[in-house]
Amino acid sequence: MAGTVERVEGAGGAAVLVRHWAPDGDPFVRLLLVHGIAEHSGRYERTGTLMAAAGVDVHAFDLPGFGESGGRRAWVERWDGYLAVVEERLDAITDGPLPLALMGHSMGGLIAASYVASGRRPPDLLVLSSPALGSAVSPLLQRMAALASWVAPTVTQANPLRGEQLSRDPGVAAAYFADPLVVPRTTMRLAAEMFAAMRRSGEGIAQIAVPTLVIHGSDDTIVPPAASEPLAALPNVERRVYPGLRHETLNEPEGPRVLADVVGWLRARVAERTHPA
Image (tube, rainbow, N blue to C red):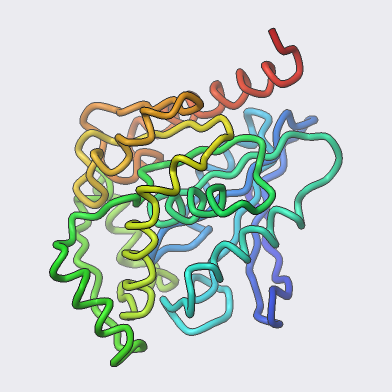
């Protein structure tokens, strides 16, 4: 059940690579997946395959500037540009009465949360995986990134990432660093826009009204679990912290179990919509 790949024209004529993992039978929900910084949708082959096997119609795409989509590498002019492409892809897969879920990992989780808080047409369900609503980067370095964004926006800085931070499976890190489509550097503009979106998320999360599942590894040192903790206070949010798991919970040895939890949550929420109490 490998994902199919297609290149489509996005906003402004830029090419966007899209992936689709279709279930063999009728799906119970349609889901759009947003990847994190530096990576691309092709890293979610196992995720897409397992979710499709469980009845989820899974769609993903490479963000502009990443993977095989067009655009300057690791660059965004304004954060709203990411929200616009999410809206475009959601519109493209909306078909009939099937519930629509939005799922984002890390920076993709920040994008998904920003999208839902923006007032655009919301999905029916939201899943946030290790959402980058906060950062371990010091406030001083964040201010320096904001200044550099104006002085030298296209200058890049290597991402301070160690392979063991991703997963306890060493094969995940080996594949990550050997992947020619991974962009291991970030422009000053993207860094500044991302940090600004994190700061706005403190107020924006109160605008998230759709049923939401948050998953986070307790040993995540890239996006500390405390970053997603404020979401747990919202009445429509369920937050699950997995002991011992690192940043990419879906790529941990326990990844299939985590995905089963996500699918189970999606099924329960869809059932509630179909047969309300």
